[in-house]
Every structure is written in structure tokens, then in C-alpha cells.
Length: 224
Image (cartoon, rainbow, N blue to C red; front, side, top):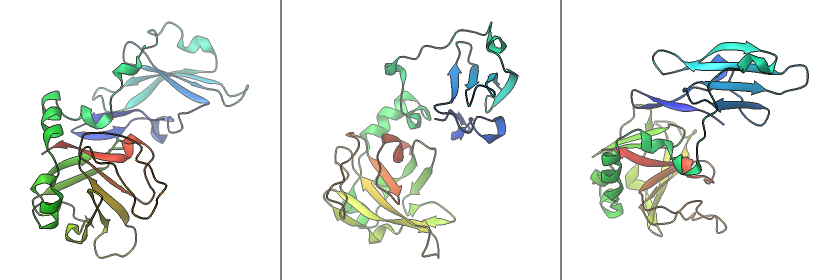
């Protein structure tokens, strides 16, 4: 599990090795508090329990450990744990822009035929997945100094475009790419057992070396 925030329009992971929060999970737990801080309880064994209190730095871009100890009283007197109902959870990519822009982007639809004909206007914009990985397209295709998508080579398959993505001038390090219009399920041309893990009316892009299992593995357009 990770905690991420938005800094200058970019998704930043704030649970990392620098603040000793790089392995949050079953035995290393972090709890949000009502005042915006976090408490940490590490339960590796009976001899190495760790209790710690984390707060945001002044810029709001990182979590810093302000208190630690080996007994529960280390975190006594801190604000109560924050209760977050299921209905208050949202995909991270939709927090990067305003609600008005979200609605506008949701109306934009991909034009697969135009893309194959060299008109990438329906693909134009910034696309982000749940890990913060970003694709930026203009009318000519992918905007990137080191990587490329040769969109003219993409083939349509059951309502989606399937092609490749990888480093420029290198045959290694690439990944499969699926450009998927809203409302169309992702279908794997070489895997009859694959089932799209989500249903959505939003346009999306998937890039990877293995088929996706979760919603956050897809890129969604957040800006034009």
C-alpha cells in the first residue's frame, strides 16, 4: 500500500525508503488521523515493535517522522483516527483536475479511424494511470524525448487499437499498448481467457507487458 499526493500536477509517492515507509502492508501499518497526520505501527516481531508519528512538511510534498518509540504510549494523545467511508474513495487520476474538467474530459471520445489516418486530435491531452505514469499526446502523437508510439502501425481489433510503445531507436524495453474508447471492453487478441477487469464509459489507454488486473493500471485523460 502507498500514500501519494499531487505536487505541481504530478503524482508523488510519499511512503518511501527515505522516511522508512517503503513497505507499508500487513505487518507495517499506517493510520491517517483527523488532523492530517499519520501514525505508524510496525509489528515485525515481539522485540522490534515501532510506534511513530508522521506529519506533512511545510510544502505538503512529503511525510516526516516527528516522533518514535517502542511502546504504545508513544502515540497517545494524538488526534483520533480518520474514518474514511468507502464512498469517499476515488481514483487518484481524477484528483489532478477540477470536477468541471473531469466532466469535460469524460465527454471526449476517441476516434480510432482518425488516429489510424494520422489525425490524433481525439487523443490529444495528458493521460495518467494510478501510479502516476503519464502519456502526453499532441496532434502528431506521443510527446516524449525518449519513448515513442508509432500509431500508424496500430491495428484495430474489436473496437480497440492495439500496438506498441517503447524506447526510441531500441528494439528492447517495449510494451503492448491498447487504446480503448469508453464503453468498449479491452480484448486481448492472443489470449481468449482474458477478461477486462473494469467497466467504464471513459476513454482509456493501457500499456504493459502483462495484462491488467486492476483499474489503476489504465491511463485516463485528465487534461487537454
